[in-house]
Length: 246
View: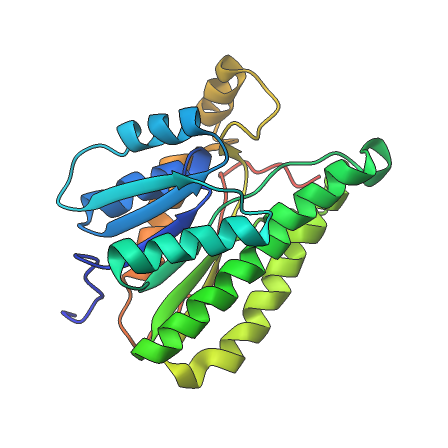
């Protein structure tokens, strides 16, 4: 096949690109020649992310913004319009972990929902309006196998990821005629700052095939984005060989 999508010059917005899977994805996209914009809540982590993006034929820029707020998402898309002239692909990886809802303060669990779910929907809506006007695009949402395994302690987090899953599977039927593809990547356990364990414990889990590197998820995201125009990766579940399921 010679009709896979070439990412060279593609205008791609990555939410949550300052840590974990988002950071690894930004670096992969730059290496594939994409023109990437990302954002985070803190200047220090944003600066670190831009440094870590590495070299490649692509470019990366960033700004400070909060995915949980309307103002933050508006600022990001205004910057996208101004600097890149539009958007070809959206990758949403902005997410926060959570405790059981009865162990969290009201404002805290609401903020997780606003970041993980509402921020994803708000980004998707703004991207769709732009993609529809230009004749197509690709929306890729980073979900989680938490929606399937429903592990103790993940009630709030799993609810947000289940919402994204249902949203994406329904949305793809609504925008198919607009030439917009919709994909969900469902990672299992991944070595990111969200994991509540030490770096040594993460490395041991990776060695024991109980955890994946963030780069492995980023490679999967690139795979989904580069399929042919006729192929849509609807759901792709990737997990370590020895995945804990409870």
